[in-house]
Length: 207
Image (tube, rainbow, N blue to C red; front, side, top):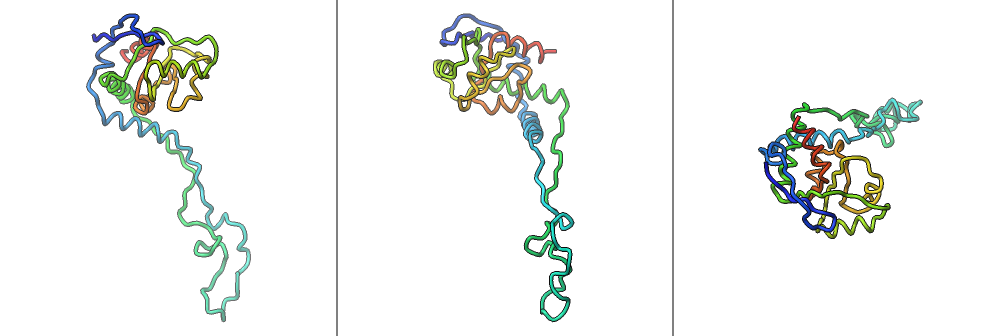
């Protein structure tokens, strides 16, 4: 097992903790990361785009002009797709874009993403992350003290004080362990976990 430093919110080393190689130092499978991120983004699509076909456009109840003598095409309806204001041919219709990949693939991709952050020295472990009151200024001070630019914080349990303090800071996100996902790990440049969160992640991914 590898050993990493434990820091406090002032950035000072307060101890060390062992991290499991099968989770934070495994083979990086980039194709699995790609597959899972692609799935996550597809599942976020609302799929509500829609155009009206000729049967849904209002109007068109009578022939727009007489059959003969105009020199124009023999129009039967103003709802024709070739008419201005007419229906749309083969336009988008509401659909479900969601799909899933096997659980083993998701877990392997998550391990690969964690390895990428750890091997790039962009993962830090904090002894704890606690605030007395909801304060964006205080949380931003922690981000600045730890020299973070686009961090993802992982906490072990619900903590509205921390979560609400961070939600208005650009490029900063706080997730609970159960919400940890490949897309957010890759999207953020640094991964910050508390010791308790680290143990929960190892417990889940080692099983």
